[in-house]
Amino acid sequence: MACTSNEKKQTSPNILIILSDDQGWGDLSFTGNPNLQTPNIDKLGVDGISFDRFYVSPVCSPTRAEMLTGRYHLRGGVSGTSSGQERLDLDEVTFAEVLQKAGYVTGAFGKWHNGMQYPYHPNARGFDEFYGFCSGHWGNYFSPPLEHNGKPIQGEGFLANDFTSKAMAFIEENKDHPFLVYLPLNTPHSPMQVPDRWYNSFADKDLDSLVNGEDPEFTKAALAMCENIDWNVGRIMDQLKSLNLEENTLVIYFSDNGPNSFRWNGGMKGRKGSTDEGGVRSPFFMQWKGTIPGGGVIQEISGAIDLFPTLIDMLGLAHKSVKPFDGISLKPLIFKEAKNWDDRIIYRHWNNRTSLRTQDYLLDHEGALFDMNNDPYQQNPIQDQKPEVTKKLRSAKEEWEGEMSDELASNGKNRPFTLGAPGAIYTQIPARDGTAHGQIQRSNRFPNDSFFTNWVSLQDSITWDVEVLEAGKYNVELYYTCPEKDIGATFRLQVGKDFLDGKVDLAHDPPLKGMENDRVKRMESYVKDFKAMPLGEINLAKGEATLSMKVLKIPGSQVMDLRLIVFTKTN
Ligand SMILES: [Ca+2]
View 1 (cartoon, rainbow, N blue to C red):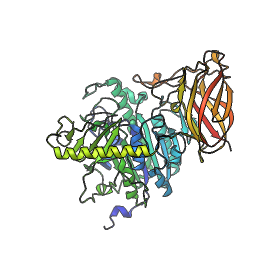
View 2 (cartoon, rainbow, N blue to C red):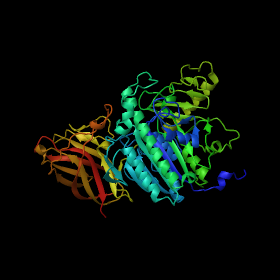
View 3 (cartoon, rainbow, N blue to C red):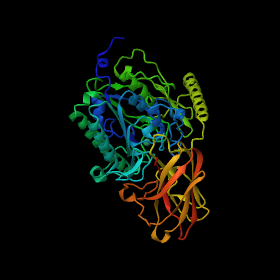
View 4 (cartoon, rainbow, N blue to C red):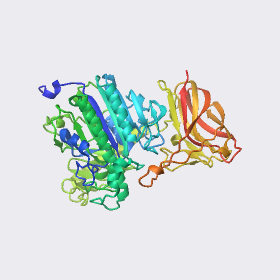
């Protein structure tokens, strides 16, 4: 094929990927929501192109894994969203690694959610720079504890603003060099916290187009969070313009799953967590001023699995994937070069449910068939009228499920939490990943940003299955709280045969927080300002071991509340 004009242009454009969290397809003025205004995000779809039927997974970690690898999440060992199941297998390659090798400087700012401990950590998956948090849920959005390249630090201000500001600083610093900025914002995921500046215009608003089961107060908070995202998108796009980088930057915007509540979503069935259309359809905009003609709407189905193959195709990178992509390059659609675009199947899976989508049909998790052109709300199943199509798609689904379950099984289920990996200075081992024994309780049934509490008996302990990847000396710190009346407990932290004894000497008893910023009541754990307690240095042997915390003496009524253990390499 002849060289088209776009291929002669800049071959190493900067790449900015903005990913929102739990923002539904309908949470934009672009898609017709009458209740909010998102002019800056909408502009990406007007000045760039918009993919009308772009599919992600029903929840966070799977979508992120699929975007990073171009492969279905189950192939990469991502089978859940917490307790280590969110980790992306180490033999998977991310597009960030490919860009890094091609000379890009790379930074991720926000919620990672594909593994916390190095080498699952973003710094080991292709990102030179990481600022944010690795869990799927964070308990407070106002200046909470975060990490910078593994090191615990304190955030500055409202998280979505903070992440965007850090990304902008990175862009400023690297404006003369090809950069990849991945900005996975943490909103409008719960907790439903948003500054007054964005909430006030919703506080007394009468919402239009209410749907069954909708909680208007939740919707108001979610939409205010979306308008805040829009403000941040405006800031970063203004920056690109003022740095004269607009024509040299490919900007992508999408969300990681359907809306996290019942609210207007174009009438589609299903929300976050569902494999129906509303749970997996996301907006997808791609802007590259001067290269991609603006205003186009692509009707062909596509998904997060297509991002990696599309990027390397558009950038002309010679990446030979060791493992086959499930996604395909969308470049021919983007540049209107597609002659005979074949129909395809895109699978969506969560919670033992699989649905699939072709250009015209949706086969739902129960095997019912829907004509999505004439019945976009999935109201009239047509499997009886279309036996041939149904048979073909049901058998494709069965085959895919079998393949995924074989692949997941062959990956090995035993993935201890990695500790002290070569190349890592810090290893964070949070309460999230631990198992409590005896009377110790988790502060909430959702592990994400929880802590251990009610440690009251000599028989109680906490354990983690770990694998020390590199023998050596590590400084250990615990993040704890303990009221004055209970100080004095002694305890032992042990990894295999090595141990450190400690004593809770200093009282630190801050109140639970988070509720003061919540616009609606949360399901997840409240948080506290935990304090670091230095425990000293431990010498760790290489290999798999149990990391345990056991109590030796309890002079008061409890040992401590425990949030996190941090190991810092000292040699
Ligand atoms: Ca999400």
